Image (tube, rainbow, N blue to C red; front, side, top):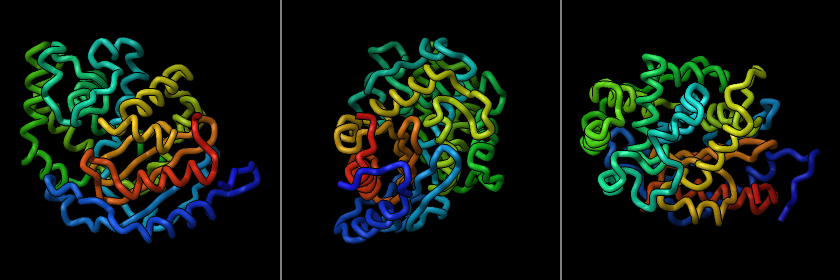
Length: 310
């Protein structure tokens, strides 16, 4: 183990990890149930670390834009929590689901209240709340990410959004089911359009590492203004740790030891409160929808540096 000191940079660690990842024999399978993602090479790999002052280190395809998918759920959660505070938790829970991210099973016997904001049902509720508060949930998300990343070129991929809409029957079922329990405010077609656009946003590891640093700064944005209270930032980090990688969250916490959130585009973001944020991307997924190389890289990062929340 190479324990990090305050005078060391992350670059040598990232280069060491990239060399190890290059030798990995298996990288998983891409998310072929979303046709627009199916063509990605599962062996692509990028990783970035952003420090609190905006310094970014990277390796591999760290500036290559990719489909963020469920990574955006962290940012919509923060945007709603900033507006609603604890009222949000009346509509969505904070417990691990133990089921696949698109499962309908728990909703029926839990009266339409999703277990947490990061499974699809919970993310639909959060997007619905943001839509009610702003009138343009996806637009609010985009403005926030452009500002925090410093990249005004960030945008949605309309082809990916259309692809998800064409294959989004299960998400539509989740939304209709929750609406039957009075847990959705907006018309379902409006909500689904906002949700699919949100998930289609493309960004690089560098963009996402920078955009996530408000959680490492205990709620402070890049310009020094406060988005979340320290307590709210702690809440988001806690839900990421316990729920951010779906029904593999326990294994992720055991291996990596950081709050993290994965997406089926192959990205994972992670937070070291008070120190830095990370984003890793590799499109090959395991059976639970998490990047095989991404989890391995984060595991090696915390092992090599000694940096974790434990």
